Length: 136
Image (cartoon, rainbow, N blue to C red):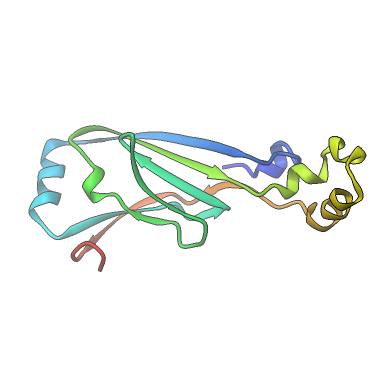
């Protein structure tokens, strides 16, 4: 997925990536009958990830690894995944014209924090199947 810097170097904020996964009834039943855990690995993320599966919060992280146990959230049929990625404010500060007329304190902060930093979901995004009880 493209770098946010390549799309808009001044962007600071959040973007939500969504996708669907269709699971057969037998797949979900088999998962429930075994000790297999389904882990969603988002791969490389810059900076904060908040995951929802089927409109239910499934975890968040601001440090790697960006891996979430989604076993309990999966259901037969269509499963909706949404991951909101939020980057840092430094990109916005580097281009914030409104800070030009701000007091000296803000100008100093702009100089200190206006370092362009990448943002986005870079992946690779993958589902992994692991044997073991939840939390292991």
